Image (cartoon, rainbow, N blue to C red; front, top):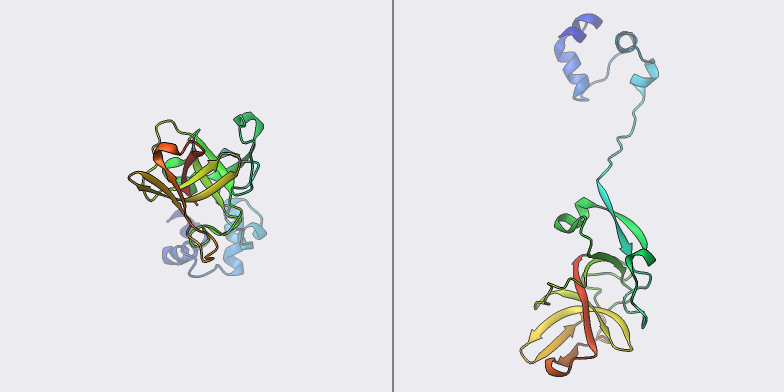
Length: 189
């Protein structure tokens, strides 16, 4: 009410300006600038709104999955970090057991394109793989991989989800799967 009275326009006119349904005329802009003690250009310029999302830093694995990496033990102090908005990680935001990996390959391209980044719940001692989980794994002497975990009673199947038929599932007998290490569950991609 006070603003409309001070610059000599109706309340509905001020309301339209606030809702961006109309713009003030030059005479009103001069009065607005005087009223708010700002330059006319401050009122005329359209300034982009900067949206700052809360974010956390996470360790970034130095090698891509599928890269044939044998030496994979690092402390989090050794790793570079990447900042990811909390909104993207949802309930996993801020967790200390999250590591970011880059996917290198087409074995999961139906759901995770090559060179995408995935967030992995890494080596959580309480984690027990469940059928349907996408996991990052290591086969002794062969490096890292990423596949869908399928529990088949006495076997573990690691299944690709690819448009390329060259990728086939890997099967391991549960009693003799010593060469297989599940590093963690992919929680976001």
